Length: 490
View (spheres, rainbow, N blue to C red):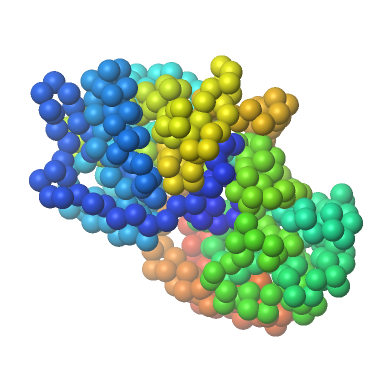
């Protein structure tokens, strides 16, 4: 599902709507911003990103009783909204403020700076059951200079890009998407739809849209550095904007733009097209095993959706670092913190009560691992599954076919592993050049990716500006680090 931070509900197979929005930290006094002990009970201060549930007090009251009984710990969980997260966590870390656990902020950089505790030995010891359930990709993807600094949420260990279609329109106009396996394959059905509904967006994309392909991105998709996963020339850092496959798709986007298959305001549109609306026909999303095909996406939309994959399922560093919890290096309760993370990720009663809501009000069990939603189940009355805990121990709805669970497990086993899984580029030697390149990409990427400009005219300008910004120097440094990584990771 596209734009991970906006649609992260896809990381579990259970939640209808888990969109995360701002929620301010509501601490009453600075002197409470520290972990400590209340008698013999250890209180852990934990920072979480996202939207504080409306019934937060009830959820945490129930949870803390279970946690205290199990490990003699209580958790002071404080939410920080998306808009404030990076700034507030940067301040907390820079000031050396005492806290115990947090959702990871700029994981690699802060781990390298020493902000996070080394969990290499602590995790297997104090969170043994949960640790042993993690796919090896999670460990490899979060290991930095031989050490593990995060306890990841076991969720969508792989991701793949899909083109998602509004089934209502497919059925209404009897449109066929059986042969869609690439952007180009979708052109015929987009044109057919546009003839029927000229006022509805055929390919609903906006300013943040970026073309996909079978690449992995050492610095993220927004930068012009990629590794082609099926390259016959070895594992090389390339500029995807100079790769024939990617350029061909850029040219296709421009053709679609001129044919009005892409909205005319795509390069400036920051609001997007709501998943639940009927204002779009096709969109691009990211899916993983915990989405159970289109189950979660359809639940979130409130109507049936049908997706067709355009990239291979791939276990990447980005997926491995999607939802990390870290222990502060200044915490006085490191062992207890890891013990709590272990409990949260291995105790079904505790985790399901947080993610589904209050048992008996929001849901009820109808089998060992099956539940039925009740009228009290509301979107804002539970925690988000993708960034709370181990999705593999979450109960599934009684409406989910058993074969979907088997497909999930098979897909995880069969997913390809990125050739650069675990590679974390140290940008320090080329910090200035990275900044310059980011500025260049900010000028070009929206108009190019949305097809607003002609790539035949614009790409030469982009590549010339990238050269001036220092692309060659960054590529050389990145390739050198990658080569060293590959030698030591064999």
